[in-house]
Length: 217
Image (cartoon, rainbow, N blue to C red; front, side):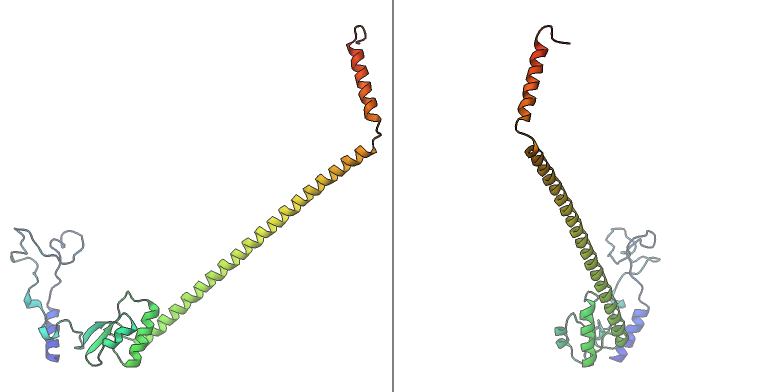
C-alpha cells in the first residue's frame, strides 16, 4: 500500500492542470471542459498544445480516492455518521456546510473515540478558537438584544408621557369650558327678570320712531 501511495504521489507531481481550451488567451473560468470542435488542435493531440486527460495520468486502482495516509475518506455531517467509521480503515471529513456548533460537537466526539479528521490539522486549537468565536458572537448578540430592549422601553415611556400630557391638556380644556358655562349661568341668574323685556320694548319703540316720516334725524 505504501509503495502504491508513493507511485501516486510521483504521478500527481507530474500531472498538468487540465484547463478549458483558450483559457490561456481569454480571461474566463478555467475549469476543465472537453474540446468538441471538429478542428480543435487539443482534441486532435497536436504538438505544442496542452495535454488532454488520459489513463496514464490516473492513480493506481487500489489507492484511487484514498487519503494520503492510506485511509478511506468518509464524510461526517452529524454524530450518527460516526457509527459508519472503522478505526484504522476510515478517516472522517467534515464538510464546510456543517454549522459551527455541530462541528465542535463532531470534533469533540472524534477526539474521544480517537477518530482522525482529515481537514483539521490541530483539533484542540480549532476547538479553542471556535468556542472563543462562538462566545464572542453570543455576547454581541446579547448586547444588541439588551440595547433593543432598552430603546423599546424608552420609546414606550415617551409615548406614555406624551399621552399623559395630552390627557392633562384635555382635562384643562374641559375644566375651562365648565368654568365658562358656570360663569354664563351665574350671569343669567344675576339678571332681573324685567330687564330683557324693557330692553326689547325700548328697541321696538326706537325702531317705530325711526320708521315714522319726519322723525328720522
